[in-house]
Amino acid sequence: MSDASARVADSTGNWVDTLAPPWARPYLRLSRFDRPIGSWLLLMPCWWSAALAAGIAHDSGRLPLTIVLFFIGAFVMRGAGCTWNDITDRDLDDKVERTRSRPLPSGQVTTKQALAFMVAQALIGLVVLLQFNRFAVLTGIASLLIVAIYPFMKRITWWPQIVLGLAFSWGALMGFAVTFGRIDVTALVLYGGSIAWVIGYDTIYAHQDAEDDALIGIKSTARLFGAHTHQALVLFYGLAVVLIGVALASGDVRWPAWLGLAAFAAHLASQIVRLRIDDPALCLRLFKSNRDAGLLLFAGLLADAVMRAA
Image (cartoon, rainbow, N blue to C red; front, side, top):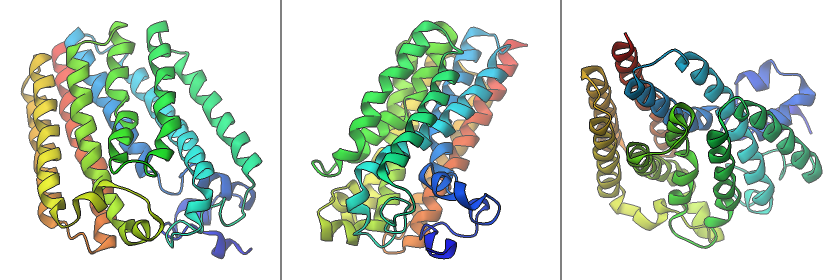
């Protein structure tokens, strides 16, 4: 198989295709390093939580190191999760136009090779996790159960995005676990807000595959909401803003954090206004733009943490 035909259908012209050694490309595609948006979205709640917890503690001394460790952990663990997802979905991916060129269904790697690569990524994640306190280590390990069951949810429920939200929002708990060695109400409310955000943006993402999913019996909130997706997004994005706002109020944040939340809310509102569910390319662009929405909120929380620690 030529490298051009081995490229994943919705990801071409990236650094993996052009710069990575040929032998490494299938593995980098398995871990989605050719499409890092998912790693960024997994990282955002981690950074929100770390910055909010540092602000509450009035101590930002360890925040830079925590930010770096969360960055590494998010990218390798998202890679491990995607590898696991591709292993469990290898037969389904072969039936969807956008995913049949992934490394496993296209034969670029074997299932045993993919499993070994998944374990290697998980071990790197464990090394990162062990830099934190015992409570944070146990909290991080607990997330693996959700990660393990997520790929099967789209076969049995119309709401797999909830399970994805539980997994991708886990970082909202980790910042508090790392900083305080506990999870309090503020962290749980932030977690709830992040879950609502994930349900919203992954519904947008799932509209790319709605027709193929219907043919092979895969369930999603995109298919469930259908023409009512805009109203559903108003509900879930609105709930995300409200719950995150409650968490910020509980953390007694100052004006930079509120400014970040306002920018985050405005970004989400613009997505709803612009969305056309019958335009897959637009759905992908709007989904990817959630990294920028998350960074706007993080910038406000980071400025707040620095201000309160001064």
